[in-house]
Length: 149
Image (cartoon, rainbow, N blue to C red; front, side, top):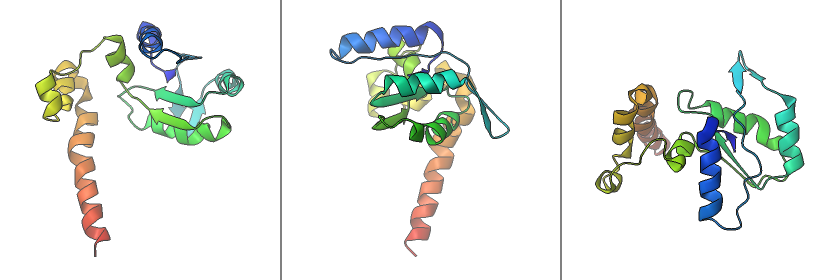
């Protein structure tokens, strides 16, 4: 796990390893990883540690406020890790797994309204949710229409 700040990451690690016997989460970092002016400001030690651990999977949790940061990190760094078969941005999933934030009630999950529940709990997510729920679907529809011509 790259990212996932503080005790939530440690708690999520323990929960996941208990829930999935045989799963080993080799590394959790809460080191600040900054992307400034097109450059990553981080320790080469993190890259070296990941290379030495040789993980099969990297889960990147760099927060919801900069929703493209984790995807950018994956694109920029995962090619350096020969062992990695899967790299995935997991955003705020660490907080959900650790129980920091509760999941939506089952009826909201079934109706596809979990985003609304998250917005109610975390109003600061409005920009991210607007992009995911409004802008992205519109872009997909526009692309689909344009591709069919």
